[in-house]
Image 1 (tube, rainbow, N blue to C red):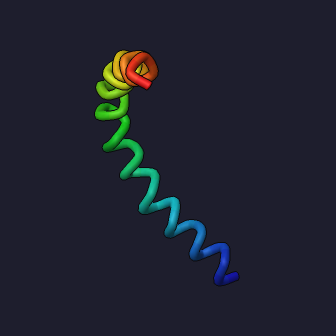
Image 2 (image 1 turned 90 degrees about the horizontal axis):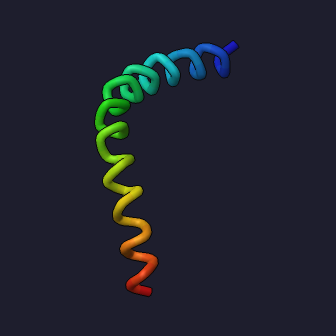
Length: 43
């Protein structure tokens, strides 16, 4: 029982955080897509 309650509260905390971070991720993804090839060329 305790594991289930713990898991629920965990998702209750994590999902809103993910929802908040999603727009930021959507913005950073193209930036990362540009940075990765540039870094790869440097190495």
